[in-house]
Length: 237
Image (cartoon, rainbow, N blue to C red):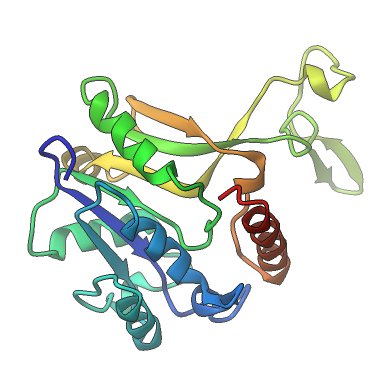
């Protein structure tokens, strides 16, 4: 609890994954992927409860052994490829036996978090409760800037976005950002009303370039594994 606000962490982890089968329990530097996020949440000074949402018995067992709560198995209709994460979050909020003021979503596929990242999200939201309804983690987009992107139009290549003035240097492109799964945090009442972490009063925390990964396939996994190994050896995390 932080400043009389009850805080719930939710870690969604379904068993099915087409890009990388069983990715949420695949060993990452000797530890199941989901356990990285569980341990990071449990190390928070302010989170009151860590809940894993899954329909998979094996994931539930591993999550419980790591110290998370799995109060119920997720319904099968909320464990499909096309299921929005927000529906999973709302399902947990509506079915846990306690009421919470703040919910923080930690995607297990974004395990590269610095030691104070989670608590920095919590303190920024609660210390600025009159300014923000939610916060999301943003990573700057570099080579994949939308103004550089192309689309295929029949047999030809065209700009993805039409611009009135040509920009020749990458350094001159306007900065754009991508929301990564390091953390999403929101007031519970606002989230349940808007059914989204993004609102008119959403703030942000910028993450490091080395955190801008989400594991969807084996190549993402290998990249994250090597980055984590490097950062841990350098004692950056």
